[in-house]
Amino acid sequence: MTIDEDRQDLDREGFAAEYALGTLDSDERAQADALLLVDPDFTAEVRRWERRLGELNVLVAPVEPQDALWERIKARIADAGPGEPMRLPEVVVAPVAAAPSAEIVDLTQRVRRWRSVTALTGALAACLVAVVVARDLKPDLMPAQLRPKQHFVERVVEKEVVREVPSARPAQLVAVFQKDEQSPAFVMSVDIDKRVVTVRQVAAERLADKSYQLWIATQPGGAPQSLGVLGTDDFTVKATLAAYDPAVINNATFGISLEPLGGSPTDRPTGPVIHARLLQVTPPQNP
Image (cartoon, rainbow, N blue to C red; front, side, top):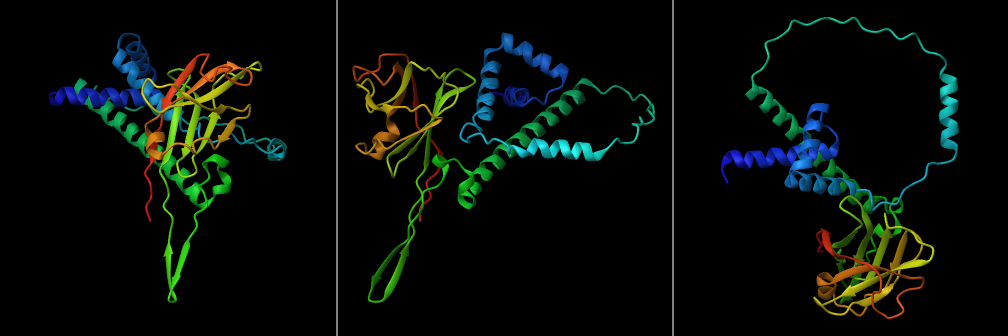
């Protein structure tokens, strides 16, 4: 790949990121819409950025505002009273400068695009830092399935010598079951130490006469084993991995199928199934 081709790939990725973020002007967005119709690679890049941005909020449960909040807002608006008449500033016509060359316009657009990508990357990093800090300092603000487990300190006393051994924090493992290219149907997290599975229903359709059932396949092509029927609430927590080693859990394929109410009558999936594998989203922290 030449330097020009490499630069074009970087520009394409930045252009797709800005399109997903919504920071393009009208002319650039029209150009991006045209590329989506004729360029499959650009379309795939845009979908990847939409997934990166769209999945940030699925691990956090929605929070409803307090009932009195709207009343306080209306009271403050009523107390504010009418303001002064709006005055438009005088328009000063600046002298027309010479039109920049095509090379300068192209370079300016690239600099602006990569500044936007840099800002986007910084925002994603800030979100991740905020989640990690909240889990450690304010765990009560996080959903129950995302709160860190309590760590215990072991004191070994021998000949009046005390040794403190802090426990290690395991890696966080997450699997995303996609409904389509843009939205996940379910998000699953696994606590390896406790062998506990937490599944959040995100965009999957809620059916009164059907149930969703979780499965695990430990070998490619092997028969799946049931991990239980998912509940009707947003979050389902199940301690059903006690019989599986951590290495088996890490390499297994998980599936969620649509079954008759109460679960599969044959101990095998009978309806449509969506599959996913675990991804390590945070590294383990050793003592």
